[in-house]
Structure formats: C-alpha cells, structure tokens
Amino acid sequence: MADNYIERQQEQYEARKAAWKQAQKYGKKKPATIRPAQSASHFPMASKSDDSKRRVFITGGAEGIGKAIVEAFCRTGSQVAFCDINETSGQETAKSTGAIFYKVDVSDKNALESCMQSILTEWNDIDIIINNVGISKFSSITETSVEDFDKILSINLRPVFITSRLLAIHRKGQPSPNPYGRIINICSTRYLMSEPGSEGYAASKGGIYSLTHALALSLSEWNITVNSIAPGWIQTHDYDQLRLEDHSQHPSRRVGKPEDIARMCLFLCEGNNDFINGENITIDGGMTKKMIYIE
Image (cartoon, rainbow, N blue to C red; front, side, top):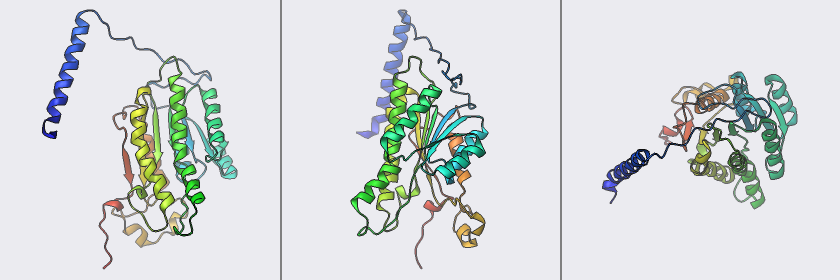
C-alpha cells in the first residue's frame, strides 16, 4: 500500500492548488501580511532573515557548553539572558559577556516560569531558547533511588517542556505574530548509546530527543522551529591535559570543545535555516559511526 504514497500526496497537492486557484478566480484575496509590533523595551522585532539582535534565553549558561553559547550569541550583538544555579559562575559570565544572569534552580517549576515571565515582560518576546541545562549523575541501578531518577529528569528533561510551553502560550496571545522563532535542545549521544549506571541520564536525553520532534510540530503554528544537538565528548576544562589517545580515537582526530556546539546553535538560528526542523544533529567527531570491538 505504501508504493503509491508519493502519487497520492501529489494528487492531494494538485487538488489543493486547483482549489486555491479557483478561490483566486472568484476574488478571494490572500490575507495581508501583518507586520510585527515593536518591543515594549525598544528592542526591535527581528525579521525572518535578520540574524542580528535576536532575543536569546539560555538555561544553564554559566559554565561549559552553556557559557560558550552565551558568548557566541553575545558576539553577534544579540540580547542574551541566561539562568543557572551557580551564582558565582553566573555573575562572572554575565560580567565578561554583558548577558543578563538569573539565578534559577530549573528543577523548581515556579522559579523557572517566573524567570521566563520576567524576560518576556522586559523584552516583549523571546526569539531563541537554548535548553542547555543538565546534570550527568551516574550510579549503579541498585544504588539509584526513584527520587534520584526523578531529580535528573526534573533538571534535564522537564525544563525543555516548561520553557517551550511558556513561549507557545506567549506567542498565542500576541496580536501581531513574530515570523521568527528557534528552540534548540541540548541532547547527548547517550540518547542512543549507554554505559552501566546511566539510566537517569539516558532517559532524560532520550526524552529530549523525542520531545524535540513533538515540539517541532506543535510549535510550527507560531513560526518556531525546534531542533536538538547531541554532543559527544566535549571537554569543558583542561583541554591541554588530554592524552594523544583521547584525540586519536576520534575520526576527527580531536576531542570536542564547547565552541563546536555553540557554532551549531548559531547556524540553526540563521534566518534562512528554517527548513531544518524536528531534527537531532550529532556532533561527536564521528564516534557514533565507529564500530568498536574488543580484540
């Protein structure tokens, strides 16, 4: 039955096209384009093709990959806010980048929602959300409590839904649609490969992988694309202390850096890259394509 799927789709397309032409013939005009309103904070509404001065919110932006993402968007001239539970590192990153820092424990639903509402009130909208926050707590399954498992999900997975839901609710209530929107969720190659003792982390990243394509469909109504990035080994500190074998095992001949992930975030947020949607992009130096056996 699947053999003629493409033919059926083409027939449906031709039928819709004919119906549209018929409507045009009898004077039904295409709806006029509504121009987006100016931000209440005098921050201009970004057009679909304007890659500068986006309004960006990043979770877990104080250190590591999150910090690299904050730095990357600040360099583009975007207006950037980020949250993190680490106040010391958060203040340092804010000072060095000019980004706005909010101290937030993302496992606290009310705290995360309050942070986002403050940003939406100040900026009038958010163009880009990077759901980066996450912890990697590994322990034997016999020593991992249900509460431990739930805690990992409350930090790694649930905030992706909370931030995406709030942006959708906000966009739904706007009288003038924003033609641009991006959500990028930081996944992990562990969504499809594991080691013992990683049940909570694997479940959270697998959830992000699946939630990403579900959100891509649900949020398309408000011009928001949703994609995820699955990093492999990304060394966030002491890069110069890595061994030669650490680098050489990667087909790309090096271990990854936070900037590798930040550059992909910038790429996905380019105005013309809205046809990439619902995808997970692996950035691991080729490791997940490498067949490994113990000899």
